[in-house]
View 1 (tube, rainbow, N blue to C red):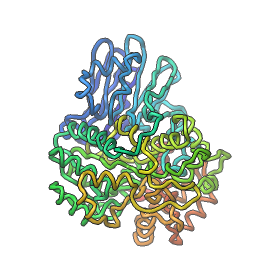
View 2 (cartoon, rainbow, N blue to C red):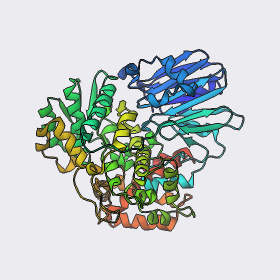
View 3 (spheres, helix red, strand yellow):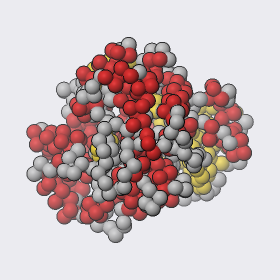
View 4 (cartoon, rainbow, N blue to C red):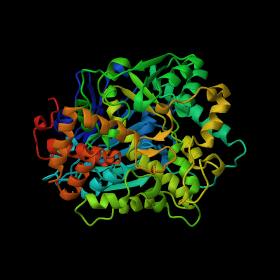
Length: 583
């Protein structure tokens, strides 16, 4: 897929990393080399000409994968950016808005600098070699050759089941690390990391808060839209996407809205909202001749199986026809649901318990039963919390929830980025305003043990009314209602009492009716039973539940099938023919 690559072992090693990366016919590689310092960006080229930068100067080589959306507003040259990253005293990183992954190699000091944006919208993986070398890439696969006898990281497998994505600094492979959001890494023979941005502590007064949030959002969205000349907006038609569309419409941006039906939006409400805003709306469909099995394989390939493939928006459309329908895809939904449940976190509550209750795909006990190790699945949540800001538990929970979102929802967008340029709103000022949201604008303020209310958060309703009260009069269809699709939870952050998920309903029905999909899933579940660190009997019991039509079974099934598909291909070379995936 497109992404950042680099090494301290010279241009030949850079070529090897590029060759091991996924490549489409239209990809281009822009590179910079200074002695043994070599880096580059695999990109969409003329299809997304405003994204990605490779820079050389002053003994430095640097690259940005994505865009620094506020660079012009800050009056920073690329030299200012890269020199500021190398010189911490300039405090440049904390001022930059994304979405981006950044690398800079200082050939003079033999230092490598890597950084992720404040939201963690684009991953960076890295590995240190036995002889002091250092490689990095946006994918795990190109780095496997630098790892002796690569194997699965048991804690990462636990994360994938628990949260729907691998958390923190882990990848699925022991020995390959990942850089969390808002983090600056320095390699000078040894790796050191530091967090360069965190949300502010004091809350904001309720009076005027929606206007303050909307002001930060308008600025961030305007900056992002200015980085692409002909954007398409992912538009399921719900309140969050209406906010994005309304802000782009009021700015006069020439944007087309793009709507999938079914799981990923309601066609009728999206068309009505787009027509009201005066924006063109493209109603997109999957190619009936391309099978879901092939779409799943593409999604697993693009994400290195580090997120649950059932959480990817628009499968199988985005793995096939999206490339012909758009050049740059904007994701503008505010994602208030990731923050709303934190209104229930009180002074005596544990942020770890809150995350376990509201931000996980499976209960820890279910994860523990599927694993053959003694590791407590909640240990990863404790690590996330320990790396989040201190202070009141609510503030810590908000920050931790945003970091989990980076490892799940934002990681899944690698599938779209594989096909087209993408833009995610990643603004420090906006995240700060969201994290400091007054309790009255969150969904609830009850205790954790109380059932959560339904519907959109009050802040979402307040912002839509401020933009245009008439937008609230267009009904939201069932396909476009707010919900946390990345974890299969209800929009309010709670698991449904019957364990049903929208994804589970659709995919379990597909499993029962589609022979090829059934064979694909059955084969992978049979094979993953033998793979460490999983408990074969527990996986077999899960398989039986799926065969019996248990909707709640599909969340772990999707995680395990993606894991086995990726590990079989890249760790032990299993033939894809056995799974029914086209070569």
